[in-house]
Amino acid sequence: MTDTVVSTPPRDRRKKFAFNPVWGLLLVLLIAIIVMNPSFAAPTGYMNFLKRAAPLAILAAGQVYVIVSGGFDLSVGSLISLVVIGASMLTNNDPAATYWVIPLMLAMGVGVGAINGLVVCFLRVPSLIATLGMMITLTGLSFMWSGGAPRGYLPDTFRFFGRELIRDVPLVRFIPISVIVLVIVGGLLAWAMHRTNYGRLLHAIGDNPLAARLGGVPVNRVRITAFMMSGFSAAVAGILLGGFAGVSTDVGTGYELQAITAAVLGGAQLLGGRGSVPAAIGGALALTAIFTLLNFLGLPQPVRQVVQGLILIAAVAMAMHRRERTGN
Image 1: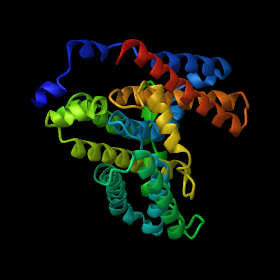
Image 2: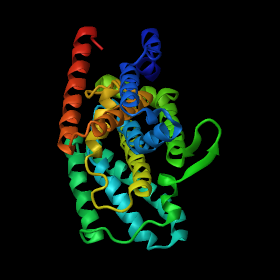
Image 3: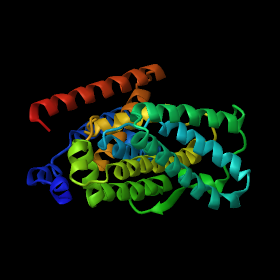
């Protein structure tokens, strides 16, 4: 009976290969950036762009799991900050500590995601409220742990993933390690969502949780795993941002909404049942391109926030209009 619920109809299979507008938007934005700054077309320009976009792209790839399941994860930004602060405190200026601190931070991310999922599934708390509460809790823990100010520093062995480069690469000259991490993590998340039975169960739950439950789908287990994926991606993003930007108590501030915006920009449906990891990564790249374009135009930070808010509203409105028109 489960196979009946989660099987993909032929029409849906064809849709997987349909062109997503986010890639057209990204192309237009990149052309606009090149027109304003021709040096962006050089390997140094676009590789640095990918390096900056990698943490958000990984975060959006994890966030889309929760969105497809019909929820939200607002705790990822504060989790990023906790990862950076916790890593700086635990390494204690010892490069050798990196090799156990990084696995610990990844485990912490998965653990936070599991707690979010358990609260949502078994305490019946809406994901918006549960993860908002977790966001506040993690922010408080970060300030308690750090004393309200950045302390210590991240050794080079930790910052390697966020700022180091592989040099003397043919054609592109260099490849940032963070871009390699994006390809690996993004590829694994895309495979799990689009090439495994788990991904089919996830979409079935987001589309119709009652029908999925009646069809024998382990709804709670699938939803908890989705939150764990989001927590894992937040921990990876925190490791990259720590290497890229250093220690800060607010390094993750705002990333939760950026990740949701990127996922929605990539076509994810906030009511659940629709979403794609590659498209979410494309949305993150497009959002980063928009911010880059605004910087080239010399517009202040508040304008960036206004634009992000308008993009989120417009993307959701378009998605709802499309759902009403097509019925899916």
